[in-house]
Image (cartoon, rainbow over all chains, first blue to last red; front, side):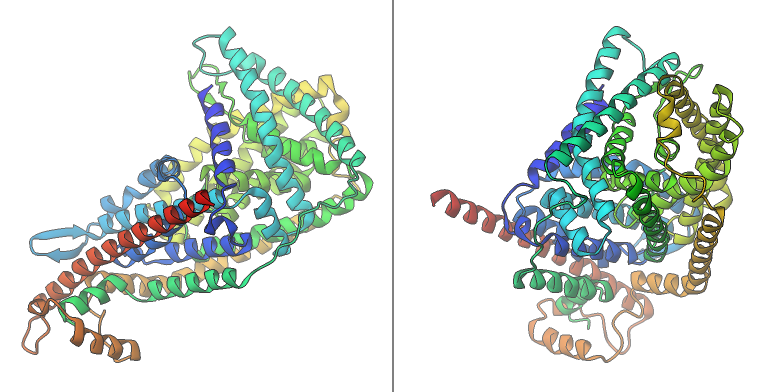
Length: 268
Length: 342
């Protein structure tokens, strides 16, 4: 089953990348989370037909990719995977919105096409931003960040446990589906007669595993608290946060490329 | 059914985050009181989350169609853990999907939690599944309850997707057309989901009936539909609020952004920034021939002027971004070398 193996590698890839030690990786996780959220909010809030003024937004991913030593292709591949949905839902824009928007020389572009391109850019930028967050921040660090943002402990525990056991279970499920497909070649999936048995067996095993995990946790001193270490914010973290917010606000409220162009041509 | 960041507006995303956070904090409170009675539930929730996540990747053949589907898991979690714990577990699954697989982004997470978690755990489960099961658990009631609840949950969820997309106004998809496209597909998906859930629950009911009876910690004495109704009402108000806000603000925003593209009202005004740039450009303007701004010019040339400025500016910004990329890459390499030498 390629899907299950692929997702296993996907999780592993980001987990390993997040363990690197670069300027970006060393930043406080809360700050990185806040900057990512603010970035996505800014991208999404750009006008429906804006393309030009979004160009400076590429500076953020360019910097994080390079400073964080993140490979471009694996991240970009995931971005492409999300695109079909956007392409499908957005196709109505060029079809239904045919009003002329830009006349430059002899080129006439419909407003719908502009908003379609704008939508694709927004999707790509926001997905890349999310992927960069997880590529530079480990899940434990993210949990730390959530803790300092007063997200309830119970939720953080569930989140961390889900993540950890996803590893274990995916491997187990992958074995099971491989053995099934070896005995039932050419089948697209699991036969409906076995739906309940296969998943039910797995679920029972999972349930029992949860019991032994709980016993193991108790034996190691678990008393309802999860140790998560301190979350210290340094000056450089504050600087990083403030600089990006200032940058994003400036880019959002000024059409920077147009201003630069005006200065260059003297058409101010 | 995952919504993407680019498809929703900041206002819709924010409102749905607030609605989901409200439902989540209510669930946390409920689960906390349940935990006093049974603290084994925390690892169970985590491992069940991983279970649903992993089992979503196994394909199940749909009889008679030749295609395959997978489990969604919301109803299964609610049936085994109770709606509150099930909801929290589903949130962590959706968060991991958003972070690692870009299935729905960070901003759209609020929407996705609401669409896939809230409707299944707080509407379909208590109002449909539980009501049917209460009549007595049997293979038949499990089947009917699961199929009806899963289908209803997904119908509500996909309707919410249509509403959120519509209020966000990012696509031109007409409300009716999108609705007609979404609902039948999700009815089919819902029925399959219900059949899969029923198959698993029936198996469990035969093999380990205590999991279904004791496993669900949604105690009858604590169960109150009032709170759920209040939650639904609150969320309806939030959604309604967003709708009216958007309806009043939208035309202006639209005109404003068109204006930006065409660049008509782009560089007027006499703010300080403007004056500053005017001074700067007098000094550094290196393409003075392209100055189309004179007293006698027509509207068309004015537009052309700003277009040229826009294109030049865009190219310059792109070059600048690439330049920053090169510098930061160099910096990274130098840093790496220093570390290796040490």
